[in-house]
Structure formats: structure tokens, C-alpha cells
Length: 297
Figure 1 (cartoon, helix red, strand yellow):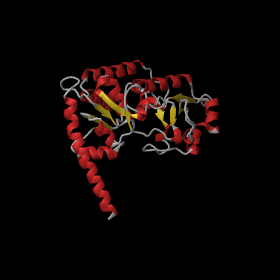
Figure 2: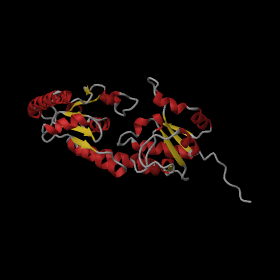
Figure 3: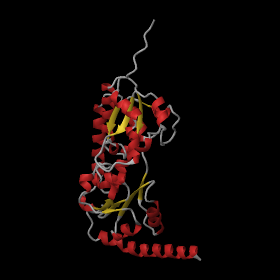
Figure 4: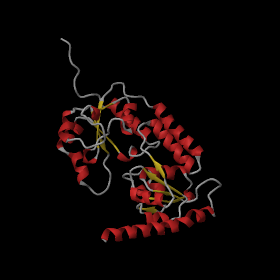
């Protein structure tokens, strides 16, 4: 009986959402931003937030996620300051009467599922694994918000920065350690960023074939030439960050074998990933391997 009751509630919620959303896009289209452009865009994912806020007119954006305003993780915190925010609940989204909803592939799945059931499927963004994927996603969102020329300009900006970067002259071995010791998996965009800087991702050597946490012992034994850590950010300390101040890592800092880069710069695809490539290449040039070359007898 309890299960049937829950199904009844869910069915009623879907019916209400469908009725509410049925008038939403029509209302939004009464005052369109421009012919062929969505007038009320809602973003359900931080990476979508960043692209929407960079590519759409401010008047087109009805809401972004609450994450967009946190400068510790967002590259568009200033742009998001005056934009309404949601926590990705279906009720919030429907109340905003959007004519375009953009979601990520792995977030707000309940809301995405409900929107699909009531006949309003969101644009779902994938997770690019390389720079071609980044370019394609930028252009995809730019076209969706009605400003394809801005997407082309953003891609040109990305490529312009990349073309000016001088990769490291030596293939130094790099290990990325994020809060909770999560690393960059081989075959990911982060891996592509490391390789673009002329470096080698140590995560591939220690058996990581997908993003996961690295035991601190494995990180120490990997003996990487360069360890990439999150830059210290103002905010509430957390247990996830505590590991990044372990004595082992402090010793590597003292040896000049670490570089700090804000995690927000390579959390999402966008022109900011080129800055990560540039920082890694610069760090590699400034921090030669600490091990001495082998002498020939």
C-alpha cells in the first residue's frame, strides 16, 4: 500500500509538472529575446552554467545553479552574482517557465527524468575527453542559446592561447592530486591537458583507468617530477582538503616539486582549460626534475 501511495504521489507530481510546463514555453515565447533564440534559459549543471553565462545574453538567463556563484569552484562567479539560482529541483525549474533547459550528463538526474516524462527533454551535455570535444560543446551551447558566432569566437580564443604555449622540453612525470586524493584519469580531458603541456600523466603508470582516489603511499612511491595540487582557496576547511597538507606532500613542496592550480580552471570545458596547459608548461620549465642525471662511468 505504501508503494502504491508513493506511486500515486509521483504520478500526481508528474501531472502537475506537465500542466505547469505546458504554459511555460508559450509564455516565454510571448516576449522572445530575438527570433529563434530562447528567452528563458535554465541551467542545471555548473559546466552548463559557465557556458550559458558566457554565451547567452543576460536577459536570456532565467536561472543557473547555486554552484555558479561560488568562486572556489566557478569561473563565472561574478557573472552569476545577479542571476537567480536553483538547486536543480523539478518544481523550481517548472516555476521558471523555461524554453530551454541545459543539463549535464551525470547531474540532477531525477529532474532530467521528470522533464523528459512530461515531454520537455533538456539539452544534455556530455563530458568532453579532449580539446575537440571542448570545441564541439562550446559550439553546441552557443547554437542552442542562439549565438553561434560567440561560440566560434570562444573557440578562436581557446585556440589562440593554445597556439602561444611552448610545451615542456622534457616529458616530466606529473601526478594530479585533488581533495580526497582524486586524480586525473587517463583518457580524460584532464589527461589531454597534461599531454598538451608536453607532460606525462603518472596516473596511467599506477594503474588508473578511470578517475579515482590515489592512496597516498602510491602517490609517494610514484616519485613524480611534479605534483599538481589545488590552489589554497578562502573558505571553510574540509577533511577532503586535509590530505593535501600531509607531511609527504609538504616535503614535496619544500623540494619545489609541486604546483598549485585552482581546481575551477579545469573542472569544466571552456577557454579556461588553455590556462591550465600554460601553467603546467611554465611549471615544468621552472621546476626541473630533482633527481640528478645518471653519470656515465
